[in-house]
Length: 199
Length: 194
Image (cartoon, rainbow over all chains, first blue to last red; front, side):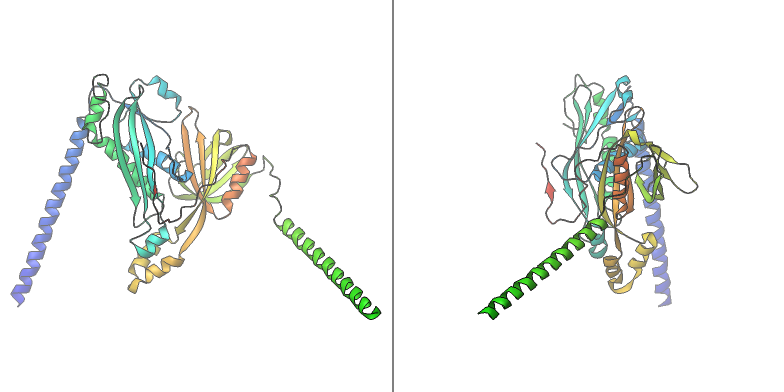
């Protein structure tokens, strides 16, 4: 009896160590992959981006949400280090920059939520946002187009959905390396690419 | 006959008296109400005005979700955290100010942990009552190079309007619509792009 107990303990410990080792290895792999994709972004030109204010479309989206998406987007795009400059709408420096992309964001879907409802029920009350974002050159050519979601389901205030959304948009832009490279050949390339860099 | 006439006269007289008294009372009540609701005191454009606020995001060199004092003085909007440098915005550069409302769970992380640890779903019951309504004040302003910035502050209920009035008195335009409070709706709002 004692032997079987000690065996099971030993088995658990071995399993735990194995899982820990495998998981840490996977994490390291992910980091490396991300770094290498970041490193391969060089197409000769490093683009700058100008973020336009959020277009609420026909939706009744609170101004605080629009401003929060805009500000979080600027912060998250800066964090990606994929762009030389991240400029705000109306920034006069934009006219001096040659390789400039403009990020347009339109809210497509919005489900207002409630923090109290989330805290009480856990399963309902989520705040959800879906936006369509386009990276456009000065000439109006769409370099990247994607639809991104952001939501807050469990913990956090409703405005946290805007932070998650901005992070997902930045992630989508970061992952669309191919599109960014192709953008440098904008006169010869097809007009629209989606987030995965395919047509 | 006479008696009846006299009685009737008496009644109408009494009725008239009552009507007068009620009219007078009504006028008195409405005037008291009007006094109570009196227009906000005339704002002196240079008088300092300050309230406690939480900076949610947007101000340069200021941490998100930090508490401090939001004040206006000499055409500058200042946010001061205790022991930290002041973040300030020129009121002339503020393009728009919006007021909103948000219900937030109080207590922060300790409360959350307590609610999670409470047995038999007691935490959920606590959550039902542990929320508070706040005003959110959203500003849109431009920097020296013309770039558009946004800043959001959270204030105690009722104080958002005071700050907005203060800013409007100093020349900031306040857009027609107030922010819609974020209520839970069963139907999803949907807008399909072409």
